[in-house]
Image (cartoon, rainbow, N blue to C red; front, side):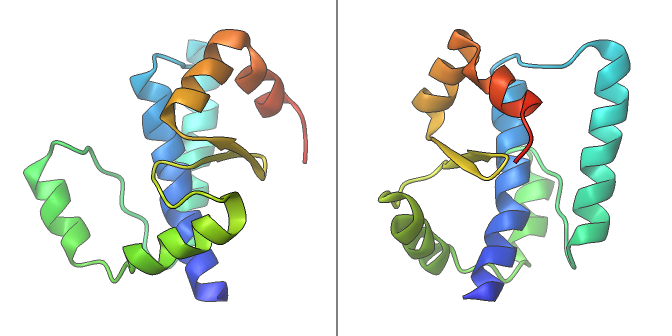
Length: 120
């Protein structure tokens, strides 16, 4: 089960970052440089493989096909953790936020910013 969590932890931060950017949530310019740099450095050095991609890029899709991700098993672990198999599933500071609609609601309500500001 540990390897599934490592794989999920590799996928979820990138998913969250992509969702936040697609929702137009971005820190101020000065902080963006630091937090983006920290995110990238953490992803690179905390995982055996880190793939930064865009969903519509054919080269990104081809590169990700070489990964050994077991999506069905990861979704089963998500089902155990959250009661949902569907993706995306977003976690902030270890707290399950929900899916895309839930994240949008958290952004609009200011709840996401509060969660990001709080520590675990």
